[in-house]
Image (tube, rainbow, N blue to C red; front, side):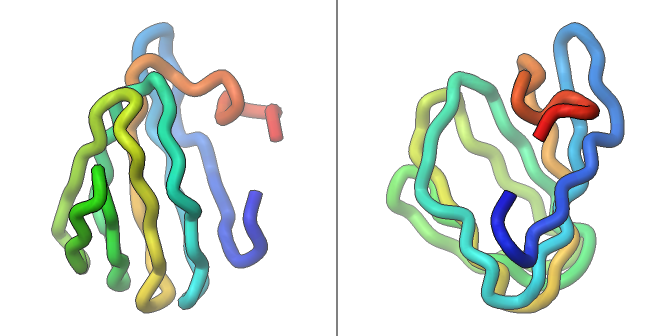
Length: 98
């Protein structure tokens, strides 16, 4: 994990996973892609999400999605809490896996 970022896997089933991310202000999740469908919800704070080269600032109550294999990144503009879902589950985020 990145410094200033804490991930907690909240639930994991055969077909989906829900994770909570606590991000310190300034934490940047580099541009990446993966074969999972991802949808996120900003619980608190403010982030800049970039999906397929298009950026927007999101605050508490906002949501976003990234389709499989589409490049995306995030920047915490404030200390933030985000809840993400992944389908299928990410093996690298399963409980007790770092």
